[in-house]
Length: 163
Image (cartoon, rainbow, N blue to C red; front, top):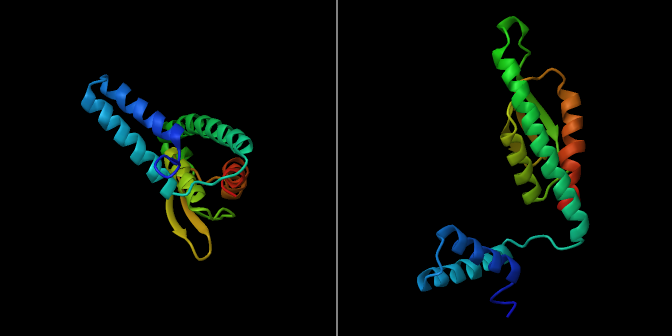
């Protein structure tokens, strides 16, 4: 049974989501929901998600999501201030190279999403050999302080989730 449904809760959730989105329990939709659930669970198994202490990872994940949401709101306000301020008061923009401790592909993908989703920053380049990311910042007032905060807020929690 585990071979066909390696993650039964994920499969059930995908099937339920399919039915909810289609607002129908017609036989064809039931079949499509079952297919989506089975295939989705099998795809997740092929991705080889990390196993381990879920409680610690859930706490770190919840903290990370909260911090990202708060930072996105704060960054929206900061970017609006920069864009609406007179040109003489604008701060310099530029690139910062940030050495990462995280090497797990999922952690790197999450970091890329966080950087890209946060207004005023964009993930420009990743050097896998050196494990260094180049990030463009709209407000490069104190790049070193931003790098320390980034590592403490995001990377530390991602290292807990993806050891």
